[in-house]
Structure formats: C-alpha cells, structure tokens
Length: 264
Image (cartoon, rainbow, N blue to C red; front, side, top):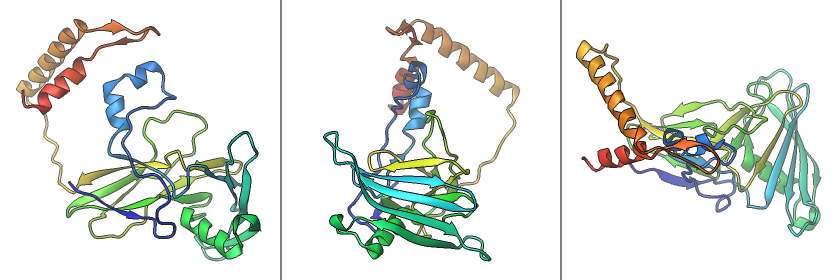
C-alpha cells in the first residue's frame, strides 16, 4: 500500500520525515526486548512537528482556557536558548472552539515580527480549547492513502515516561478527505507540554476499511489453539537465555515470525 506524503504547507521543508522505530529507551529491558511490544512500537510511523532539530515549543495551560506558548532555539555549546517568540491563546467567549491569539514578544534579531510569529504559531498549533484545554500539534507531513484505506492518528505507543498528557485518537478516511496531520493533546490547568524538532508528537498507522465478522470458536478451534500454544512454549524454553541485566529472553517468536513470512 502506497501513502503519499504532503509537506506541512504552512512550513514546507521543515521537520523530520515520519519513521518506524521499535525502540523505546524509557522502557525496562523486558519491554525493549519483547518482540510483540517492539512490533507495536514500530506500527507504521512516528510523526514529528514542523520544527528544526534545535527548535522547541513550550506550552503551559493555565486556568480559564489560557495557553501560554514560547518558541525557543537551542544555540548549543552550553549557551542559553534564544526566545523566538512568546504568545498567548485564549478561548473566546460566546463561541465554543473560537480563540484569540496574541503575540507578546517576537525576537527582531531573528527576523521575526508579529505577523511572522503568528504564521509560525499557526504552522505548529491548531484547534486550541476544543475541547477545553485541548491543543492540536501539527505534523511536518500530511498523508494521502490509497482507495479504501484510513489513517489512525494516536499517541506514541508504549511511551511510559511520566508525566503523560492524554492524546485523542482519530480515524480519518484520508483517501478522499484532505486531513492536516494533527495530534490533539488534552491538557489540564498546570500542565506543561514540550514539543521539539527531534521528538515525535504522535504515531500514525494505516488500516483498510473492511467489515470484520466475529465467529465463535468451535471445539476443534479451541483444541488447535491450545495445542499451538503448548508447542510454542515448549520450543521457546529450549532457546531462553539471561541477559547481563537479569532479563530472561528468547528469540523464538522472531524465528517463527520469519518462517511464517517466508511461507515455511
């Protein structure tokens, strides 16, 4: 299945390409070396924001529908980061989902004025306070799928680092609907969200629109299930080894997976 990548038209050419990655450095060793967890981690693609690698956006959610947003550039070499702009986005009264955007500061030495800062803010954020406290973070690329395929937008799978801000999951028919990539974070007062050019903001995977019929298992089905399970664990026990950190692992699942994919 082919997916077409469309760059963020508000800031084209900025941001990392989507990529699969089965590693999660924050997971305990059992999680990092568990093949079924690794396969979930690399389900299709991690998505990154339209930021340069040294650019960072900090978002703080206050009471009464106020988001305070600061964009910085890391200069490296132990130097303090440069503040590119500071902005506030506030929920507008009388119209749910409406917002007021105001630039509080723009760094003229970086070539920014209020209009440019607003353009940058728009390139990176959308749908603020819909629902209350929510803020959408745009991706560096949008997706167009083949006929009959949908795109699911969700949080980064198996990311266990705390604190976590919930992300809404959406499924969109991107074969006909031109969806701008967005991950909607549901913030609470006091939450701080950091978005950087080198870190993923969410994950997408692609699924076909097919009807799934659930069928009760027959007695033969259940017996076959138990037999396959017993065979797997008996064979796996012959391949187990202990890692230097005490985790017990075996590569039997990967061996079986490879054989099945080769049609053995």
